[in-house]
Length: 488
Ligand code: NAD
Ligand code: UGA
Image (cartoon, rainbow, N blue to C red; front, side, top):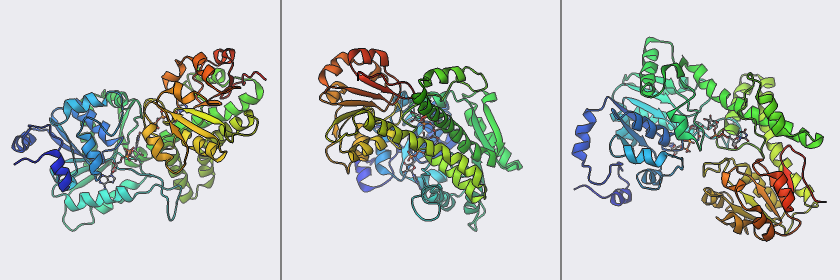
């Protein structure tokens, strides 16, 4: 008798993502018909959307995503996915139960698949040697051991997660440390998607990078992985390289992107002292085709789960190779980011007469960027904590991230979470824009102004509002990297 989904969850057994009514025997028969059986270990922000796009673009493959987190798998099998990304719901709904499955049965998934993507989390280590800097590889290592234990046929293991350069060597050593001789080829295929635009990035990537050993087996394996992407990505955008270059390129890409933000944020501080305008400077330098215009928006600071962690990982790697000057260079990107967040808070404090105690401050946005509910390393968390230290009363509004904000700030009493930005701002002394949600630019600021305590302040940590217009309404306006517009 097939059991219901809830029943399966309660018993902790395998949960396959078939739609009600699709029977097991049918699924077994269908499996034979698939050209490739692909497994992804890790059903997070990367694993879920990436595999959903592969399944959607390649109906000839059978794609299974597994995770140790039963609740997450339950959500992937429900109408409320654990990841919010524009377009993801439709893709998952179209493929799930046909050639896309979400399961907790990792062993079965390993046995049945020829290609195994590993997309587990690789956070910054919080303990022991390298704490606060090195990548914590415990989840990744457990995965390698799981594959080794369960595999009974040759596998291509694909590093999808971001890891230190030369991790593939450790992966190979673990995989081949069992007496039974099974062929494993380790391939690096780092992911470059951005949150908020994940589906577009996956459907139309700037490039797909695939690195392998330069052996016959390694090159065969990377051709096999390239073959997956060739179903929808033009061949000239699929780059093949040696495995170490591929691993390192991922860290370096994130370091370069973050470096641009820290560079423009450093310039924003100078603009505020000199009446230069950081947007004008960014525009002027960005039109140089050698520089390009992306990632030149000054802000309260960069956030997200990866920039800081990946740069610190790079810093640690440099230090462990004795390259201390190189390590210091990259570490300064993170230092400027910390400085920018603190500078934002100190600017609020200084502008509001050097005391925030008892003042009500409304945070417009808590997500680390627009288009996502993700709050990992969001600058808003730093700002909220610092404002709480100054004993301000905090009200937070965000269209997608309030649930995460409540979790992040669980230890701090008295914070209010309000969905409607008008209600959130009412009765406040100041608004701080911390996420560039489009809706904030479209609000009726006359109405907002009327409801606030005077003098009313706006600190635009994303430079998304009409500063002149707000000033005319009566606000004291403090953008990033531009002269403040005040009434006193
Ligand atoms: P995540 O935390 O959202 O997801 C990781 C998942 O792996 C979790 O659900 C966790 O339960 C699962 N997991 C951990 N150990 C496991 C095991 N042994 N077996 C099965 N499942 C296990 O992380 P993420 O944001 O998807 O990031 C994954 C990797 O991709 C990281 O290395 C990250 O640096 C990299 N990356 C992330 C992004 C992004 O935008 N988030 C973009 C590019 C690359
Ligand atoms: C980043 C990279 O852009 C992806 O290529 C990479 O795959 C990913 O990290 C990863 O490895 O996890 P993501 O963190 O999702 O993607 O988002 P970004 O768009 O890069 O934004 C990161 C932060 O920088 C955000 O807080 C954003 O607001 C900020 N930012 C971005 C600026 O402050 N100014 C800018 O000009 C651009």
